[in-house]
Structure formats: structure tokens, C-alpha cells
Image (cartoon, rainbow, N blue to C red; front, side, top):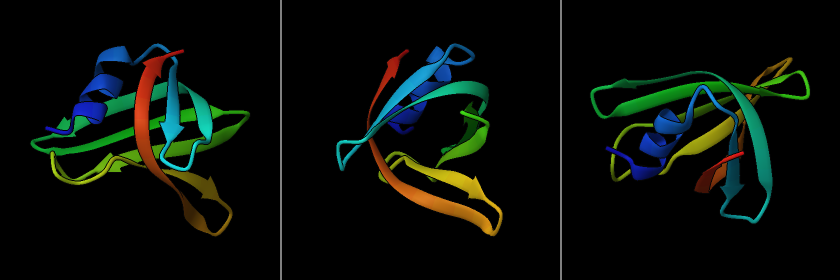
Length: 84
């Protein structure tokens, strides 16, 4: 089980603050967070935009993507998760 995904799951439905490997940070109002065996998927909102967090398991990175008119745009790998 991915440690960062587990942290998101434990904090939700409270807001979470994500720090990306590149140094950017983002605070999301969480809508959902679910595990499907080792895979994880969560959704949150910031400033009217929907974001999705996904990982396939313990050894895979936790990624965040933003919904756009053309689909999903991957923003990067999450390095840290804290309660906002």
C-alpha cells in the first residue's frame, strides 16, 4: 500500500495539502478517496477545478492530474501529504 495514498485516505474528507516533487503545493477539498486492493484513486477540488490522485500500488508514485476541457493533465508526483 502506498504510504502517501494511505495518508490522503486517512485525512479525507478533510482538506489535504499536497507537495509535489517539483516543489509546488496544492490544497484540495477532498470529495472521495478509495483503495481497490493496492490501487488508489481520490478526487478533490481547488478553485472550481477537479483534481485526481492515482497510484497502482506501493512501489508506484502517487500522481496528481487536473481535469481540463481535453481530458486529464498530469501535474506531477506527490512528495508529501499533510492535513490543510
